Length: 254
Image 1 (tube, rainbow, N blue to C red):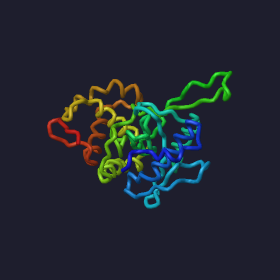
Image 2: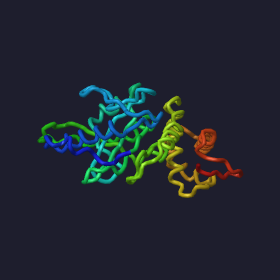
Image 3: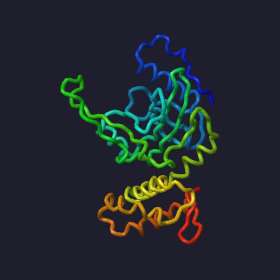
Image 4: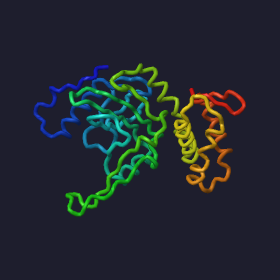
């Protein structure tokens, strides 16, 4: 996968936003592939359409591209808050590509956030624009990647190093079962995955997960059986190949 942008395309552009859009979209068209099935190339939607930026002609997955010059941060600026909430709740909500690049126009990170990890919890409402602003009162949003499990951040390129497409597809498709879950069930599974990320050890005891009970009790005030619920999630994650049960309350992350 070529990491350099085609800078010959921007000779007639002066706007920084236009330059970024032209370079990043062209790069994805020339180098990107579908993380789900590996199909290449990805096709572009027509401009000014209220849909995603790219789609796979084989498996029909849709992707919206977000790009940034500089380091990959935990927050990504997006558009209008209300519009974003509507989009992620729609049946055809897209997966998200996040791309970061250097000042010399080389790709550093390229990852996909599968759409089943894009929940209202990770969409942060920003303050309205000041009355003196051109779009006074407009309310934007940011996507908070720190609230997304490591299983939901599938890197195609990480720190300038390309991953094998088959490894990308494995990681992307491992979590597709979440799409068939009810919002409540999916929410508990995503919450449990986030808790597991915060346990530093690869092998952990059930008590380490129970330590999150006070936080989860405030998040789910109507659930009076938090520990039972956590054990249930571990059984599902074990069956899906995320963890291995070692016996006597011990587990290993896979």
